[in-house]
Length: 97
Image 1 (cartoon, one colour):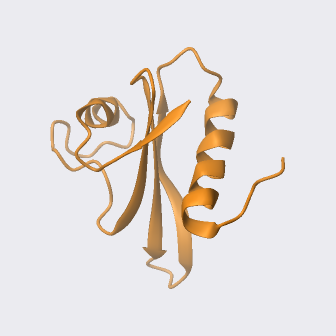
Image 2: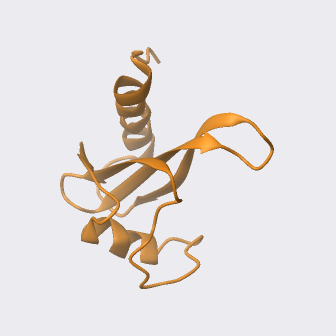
């Protein structure tokens, strides 16, 4: 259901503008600085971003920094697949849930 895209993806930015956590609607930046894996649903109606880095509490972590689903797909299915893609791209693992 997902395609890997980039921080400049216009469809993702527009979805981010409608997300509750959006701080600057209209800003071209919708990802945290640093390493991000940006996923857009093939139909353009969902976005997922995984961020990797050192958090303020000192932990080295992967975090979902945004997930918005305006598609007809179940959110749980999209989340499961997004985590699987993140593991494949960054971790070399396969999720078995």
